[in-house]
View 1 (cartoon, helix red, strand yellow):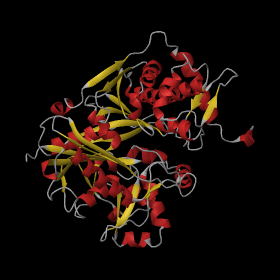
View 2 (cartoon, helix red, strand yellow):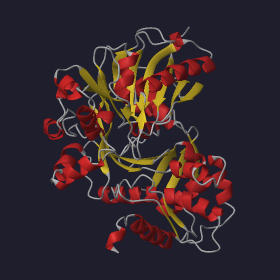
View 3 (cartoon, helix red, strand yellow):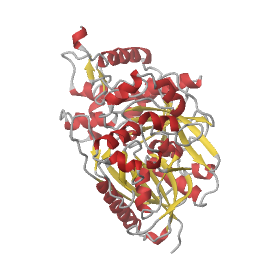
View 4 (cartoon, one colour):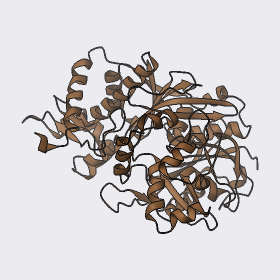
Length: 500
């Protein structure tokens, strides 16, 4: 059997997807396996690491089966993952000491507020490109060390290992032989220096995290580990590509030039723009992150995250019963020509960039006796598009030039109405690829480069052809819509009724 196929493992927030691809990007087999979410308290979100691992094992077996091949056909593995989700395990046994704390979890909000109030924000952003928010891994690590009995002492003795989910998967894929993370995931921890691409001693001291707990930081492409005792695969298959999910999508969308931008519409909405070989500290509330490192080439990106995007549609379905399935929102919204002045600010988990307001709450306003569920459905799609427009406008200000087009992916990118509203509100051309699973595709492209199946990024770019473009409608009343949105956001951020 020829050994020339790629296995992409896309470990996400609600499930794991494995894809078998050829080196030209054609998907030959695919399998998704969901796993449970745990909500111990309001604002807390956890995953069982063993559930994650089993979902990866089962998804990989399913992808190989649907492709009609066995593991001996796999030349290289690419891994992409939910990023800031934080896990600590016993270095010897590999057993986690606690459930993983998910990126959505807000339990460290008080600690983040303390750090901001103590005046550390500017220095942290200068060093790491990030802000003090519960979203990132650093304060999650500190919480585990302080709240799991004996954890801090064990970490000081070198008995424990921290990892984001990529690191945990590499540990398991390699049979416990490799403890590593790539630069993109490391750049989401609040602990990596953006200039040196090493763990920053000043941030480690501030957050009281022992350096011996941390994985080795490696490039996004290259031979990082080899499989050992992984079900369905022979030993020795190289793990040759790793990137956090949003950076993998940027790479999978072939955003290789400065100013190239993509948006992934998933549970949240994530916008990244390529800013080239030098980091820029944002003046407008977005973050600086590492896009990828291949060999000696380092590329940076600005990133903005809206915590709730597709999850707002899920809330209409599960919380309000407005729709029976997520795909029902587009035909319902299309039954009205506009939202008729209704605005929905989907701040159901606070507001991310460019506002960074953990206390903001969801807001539906502009209702009249004539408002219907169709208006609410349309306002939901518009709210997602407004959030993304906020991010794109902030990034354009940082770059000093407008962004003219944006590539999109993720489940909600199938929604034509959403993408047309996005084009109208952002005044940008929206480009949708043929295959929306660009996160997995990016991991596969990095693995193909790392294993030598592809030689250049230009070869990799051919793996992501376009399906459709959405142009701004000349009749769209963008200015009025944006003014109404900003007024609605201001109301969503008003969280202290006692001051009225």
